[in-house]
Length: 260
Length: 128
Image (cartoon, rainbow over all chains, first blue to last red; front, side):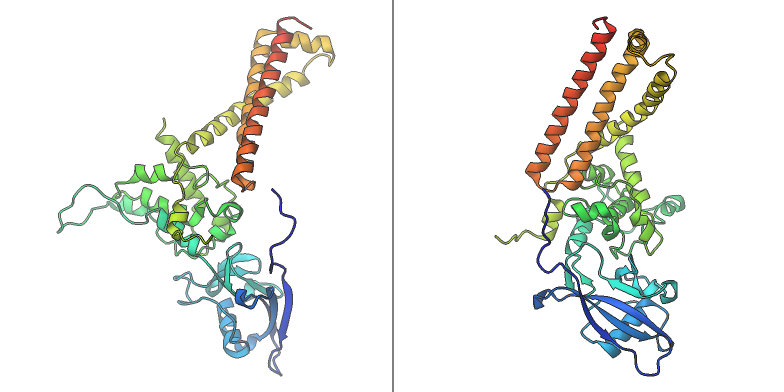
């Protein structure tokens, strides 16, 4: 039952330190997780002294500066730099978030940057989200209908019903919530996690969708849904300010409602 | 052997069991009942005039006290069984060990339940 030895390559070592250019006055240390599974070596943390007088305000600005000017071998994902693509999700200062919307000034002392917790690491800050995306696909995140609608008509939705999707449709699938969830850490092979469940509820709650019952059927499972114990880490870390815990509670409520 | 199933096939797994909402519901209902029962049992024992054997037996022999104590014994072990099952599902990842743990918890809780019911009946029906 219990494993008393750590798997190979799991002990973190101290890596190199890269100093700021001479004359830099306003220095902030960035302690960054580095791991290359192909090298066969243990992961390490490298320290980079960043000249803050010559750097943008966000953590992503510093990471791009480090990659561009100090160590080009640093691997990370980033794209939009404005919190809409969800690529630069990582663990910053012990908390999951988007590097592009996390201000360096909000972090006291050294800035630690790790990949998302409890996911396989592809390299450095890039984690393998294959299972996360497959779980998202498994909730069939698209509209399912049986009733035919004339091809020249839209499927109508009232303004009030459309408003019910606010707080749900904004999810950018950055995986901050699911990888912050202890229940997802222990059982991510079977527990769908907050992101997939929020997206499932987005369609359960859509007045135009006609597969509500089938969607609920597919979630009535001790692992897929009920591993959620309302820990609320998902809601706490969501960089978009969404509330996956509430969506999961609503799904549980509907599963009871249809019994009565 | 390399697992060549697609990530989607793995995520879907064996599908939904279809009865998990029952476990969730009865856990909540039994918790709700336990609120009243625990308050009742704590106050009843605290307000006993004396804490000796004869007083407790006399208290338990009142029909209402006997019935509520039976409910408390049955529901507390039932609720414990449901909760412990959740903990085992959370932390025991090996399928065979998980099954063994859940069966052990279930058998133990039903045994304790039966022992408690037997004890209450024995006292209330006068054999002491």
